[in-house]
Image (cartoon, rainbow, N blue to C red; front, side, top):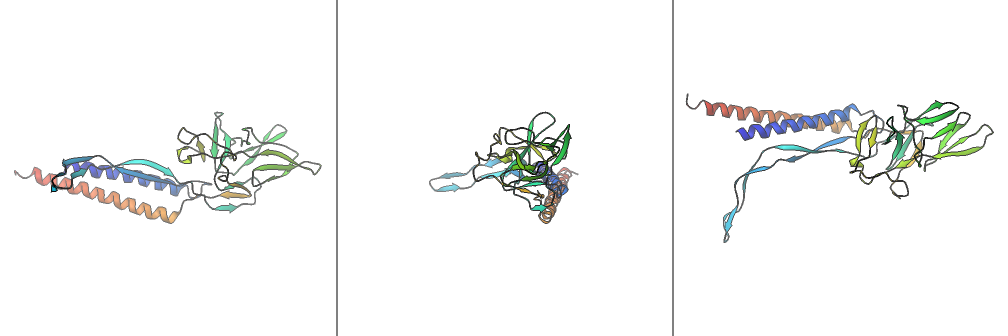
Length: 266
């Protein structure tokens, strides 16, 4: 009965984490390029009450084991591409396929994002391409992308080549938008503000040449929406809530059985 108490308690803790993950998914249903997450669990160690015992084709062919609960094993981010929503804003970029944009954080570290809702920030007589938080967007060489204040009609090709028109009407190439990918995107570390930080698990960022055939096209005037499916998340939340409830019932049942055992001598 004590085993049942602890096993059910681990079940309640696991389902609480499950609900936390689902709630975060639902909270970000309208966050640009948000990637939903899924909690994964593993059973805990087993207490072996009796081992199998087979000799000469006779004996007990199965083990007698009792599990002691569950534990969270991972929270997996689903990098399935969200829908592309047309905005008409020439500074909105979406990646149709794999890949990440690179930005320079306030700590001078390079971060990566799928959120392409960029802006232009004045820097003296120039304009710098930045995120909504003011972080510079980087080109393929790791340098901030800067425009002359007189340039206009910014355009981006599917391969990320940025061009603009000068005052005399000529079109000139400004830079190539930095687009990178990772061998294991699941290993990226979430740091908030739609940014990811590389880790040993994710591997180093690679360019289009390193990931030939696995890099998405740049879509100008589009933004990637969240890949959260509200109906599925609601169903998963109901299932998690019912699992939490039934684990609490198991604790109540174990407590009542302990109460009966304690009152046997009365």
